[in-house]
Length: 170
Image (cartoon, rainbow, N blue to C red; front, top):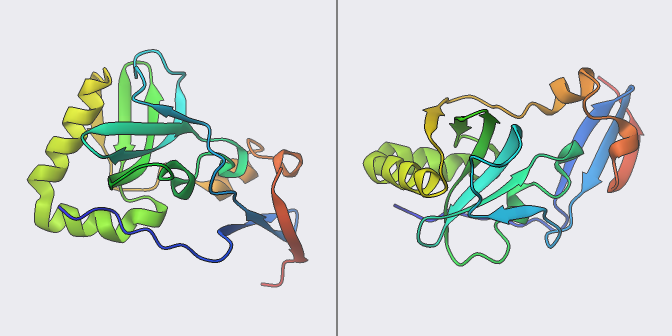
């Protein structure tokens, strides 16, 4: 299985469409509200990003407004070798996870195609080591930025890393 390929740009940014404006946010690589090898039974229900790194180590971050502190590019900092990255929803004892998320989508698809058994084994072992009892896999996005914005879960006042705004021109 190949490790995750990390592509750094000069300024890691993401654009959001809010109130007829495009808001561009910049993320600090070093800032991440992560939990290393959490007890999955005791974390709050909600959305999380994750990476599996080194020898079946799990690093997660609760998804914050506009993902400030929970981006994969932030989670991967300080790890030697990252193998799988994705997102999950915790609801009670159930963990619904996806490894087709964002930055690592291409690497994860390659590993799934050529190293499926090893990848599944690593995910199952790592999540079980952290007391994940009911695990379900989906192959679609779980964290939907625009839906969170449209539903009022993420508000423009929550943006702490605003970088640039411009009028939206379709």
